[in-house]
Length: 571
Image 1: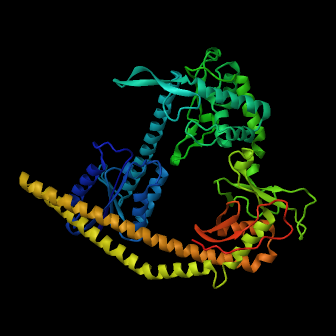
Image 2: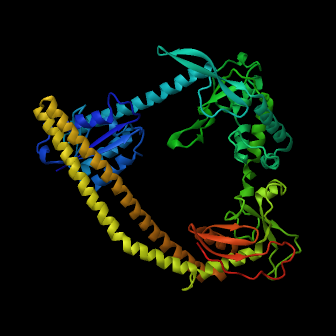
Image 3: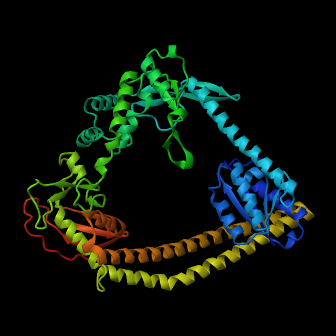
């Protein structure tokens, strides 16, 4: 008999319903209420720091995979909401457990899924758990609105042009805590004013980026400005003055405006809350209906009228805003793949319309975007003749299928490594898992003995010492097992990648003369990791390994004959 114990806690606190306490109570219940538990194998699954809002939890998913394989007779947890707070997820889980003949026990509510009333009670408890989750979210939002009305800065990355300063001590639930507000940084705020002025005049994000790059102006964290960085500044309500126009703009946008119209008198700026979501740990912008707009305690930078105008300009230009990332040259094969040795992308640049190749294609070159934006002040790497480089790169890729090519030899070496190590790694992981389960079973037996017999302090100390020793051995074996499994996954992934790569390259070679330019471009994006141009030589990277390189002239005027190729040893 195999019994699974599942425990979860959203945040570690070291008290109350901790992971350890949940497991201990589950083990005690198992020994007292499940017949034959003394001989059962007990497997523990722990998800520390994961919310019950969904089932995207690593140990939960691992447990369910084992359940599907028929490796479980009982699933025990402390409370139903440890499995989840979403009624749909809980309903699906109970149905799956019934399908696989797994008995489910919640020791706190004492549910029994083998009876109709037990199933009904679980669904009812699931409804309550989901209601509790929604009430928690509502309380958090209400608390955020309350804080928003006070104009407090709640933390996070301080916007450019401001710094957070302690304002006063406030009392929250009887505890004294610091309150922060935004204060203008006179040096940084000049950059913000420049960004708004330039965009209102020229309506070009790229133009602002070019200016900053050419003048060596970096972000407050020492990084290069990008168009997304500029856009984030232009759309941040913190720079908008709280005047009548701003109030109407955000009100019409559907935001929750936490101030009266009379308060929007232009004396202060705005603060926004819940503009982005942290779901799945990714900051994605929420819909305007979820934004909370409040009166801050800092000075605004632009008027509400100007801020609204900037937003309209950004919206109007959005359709073509990212077009410079897309291939504009219909003949170029390497946009998005070719990089300058300075680390920045290169883009195709057309010659005059009357300059054509022998095949009738318009000539072009690849130039470094960093060099272009800084007018050659930050990068001096020569441009490369694009038609010639594309042909040489394709030639190198086609040569990969030849028996004596560098890539062919690399494939053979990789295949040998996979064949030699695959079986050894798999068997090692299996043996380690057996040893881990043995020790876990011993720990469970010791705990059950202690729970039944009690004993004096010396006896308890001996048992605790033995449990700590076995747990330490389990931890060491688990780490070794994970390393072994990781090596196996790398090998399996490497095998699949090599098979896929061989197939793509073979198809590319067989279909090369019938493929259109866009189709060739897609094949190259699958086969190549990147192409690096250093001003004299192009280095081709295939799946993270450097292949052979070809020397290619950088001159843009002498293009009558292709440069002679030269071999370079791959790494």
